[in-house]
Amino acid sequence: QTGKISVDFPHAGILFLRSRKRTPDKMVISINTPGGSVSYDVKVAKMQSYTLEQIFYKELLLLLPFYMFIVEKSFPACEKDSARLQELRESLIGIVRQLEILTVAGIISEYTRKSIMELSNKVNMQLTQKYTAIQKEAESIMGGKVLEYEAKTIYKSGIECGFERGIERGIEQGTLKTLYNLVKDELITNVEAAKRAGMSLEEFTKAVAML
Image (tube, rainbow, N blue to C red; front, side, top):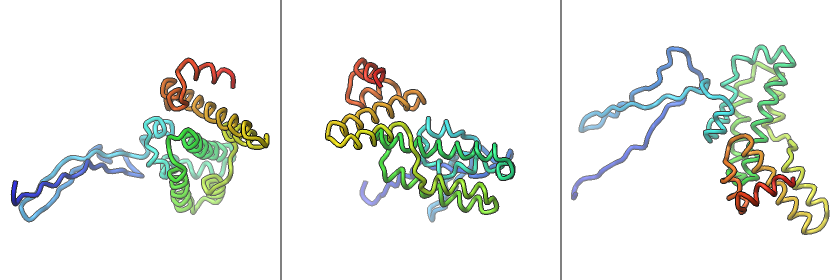
């Protein structure tokens, strides 16, 4: 229609990094214009309501840099108790490994992986300023420490063979192992894993059995 402009507003949401019992499950956005006002409900997401498993399963990777807000209440105990600190360390290592697996499988790009790692490290450094031991562990892991996992090890072994087929074999086995791990963690199905590997479901099943 001549003389009329239609503007579509995107769906909105609000993320609370810290929340309490009285934090609402939804909020209202009001937009005031010269021609009048309009209000609508938006959903509220609370960081503490998520687990690490849910973040990966639901592909909410945008939340990963704020993971430490989920376990923030445990900081005093982790700072004093080496066992609790080790649990936190293992959860951070788990994040790094899962991101590397998703990268090798082609689900996310190397740029995305690095961006998540860098932002996570920045958030962690700010959040743990009062906790020396936790900050040291978090920085060593999320700040770029090299971690070995099976797919990377297999890939490297192929390169070290010193010939082209060795490299190809290392890549093939590394990819298959990565996809198999994603299936085990229920991040993708067997059918989807086979498709990503360029195989039929039967071929993928047999190939994984030979690893």
